[in-house]
Every structure is written in C-alpha cells, then in structure tokens.
Amino acid sequence: MSLVMEGLFYTKDHEWVRVEGEKAYIGITDYAQHSLGSIVYVELPSVGDEISKDDNLGVVESVKAASDIIMPVSGEVLEINEDLEDNPELVNEAPYDNHLVIVKLTDADEIEELLSKEDYEAFISEEE
Image 1 (cartoon, helix red, strand yellow):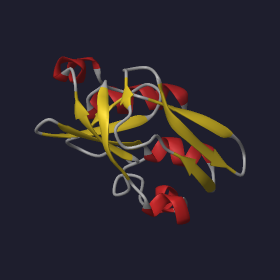
Image 2 (spheres, rainbow, N blue to C red):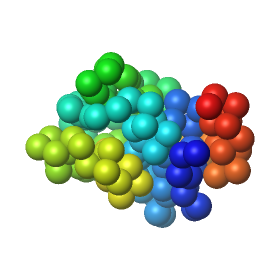
Image 3 (cartoon, rainbow, N blue to C red):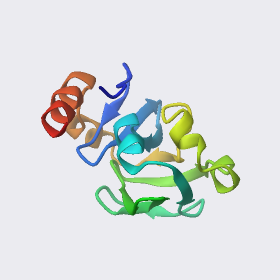
C-alpha cells in the first residue's frame, strides 16, 4: 500500500498539492514514484511561467518510462526545486518532502476540485 499523507490534496494523475496561504507546493505521490521506478531525470518549468490547471507542468523520466506531470491547479511558478536537477532520485526517496515547484495560486477555488486523502486512498486502491 502506498503512503498517502494527511493535510495534502491529490489528483487522479498522482500529483499532490500542499497549500500555504496563496502558495501551492506541488509534487508527485508515493504511488506515482513507485509506479515509475527509479527516477533519473526531472524536467521542470521556468520561474515566472504561468501554467493553467490540466496543462503540462513538466516531465519525470524513470528507467521504465517518461511521464508528464499534469498541473493540478492554475498558477505562476514562483520557485522550482533545483535540488532535483542533480538529484532526481530524491523524488523516490521522499516524494512528500521533495516538491517539484511552488506556484502562486491564480484560482484558489480549484483546490475544491482536488481529492482528499481518503478519496485518493480509495482511488489508488481501485488501481492496485
């Protein structure tokens, strides 16, 4: 069973979102990193990019496959996790401690459309 953290929001594309005021930290879930296997490269957007909900946020490449990261909420990229450029395996080691980006939310109401911990657990239990 994959680890699902309390206090985060989730998507059916296996991204997580932690909201702090008008900032959203975005990463991929434990389930996603397990499914991908050893992550060897992470492609992230540039600071200042405006990305709409459901658009491509970046790419995670593993020894198995390359997967698009889908933007769970609309926002402007404030910061990328530069540690992942040299150490993409951090996503495997601690997916909830290693966000991909921090964005400034442009539509906070979109948070309401995300899954709760319980809803995400139910969703992945159907997939496993």
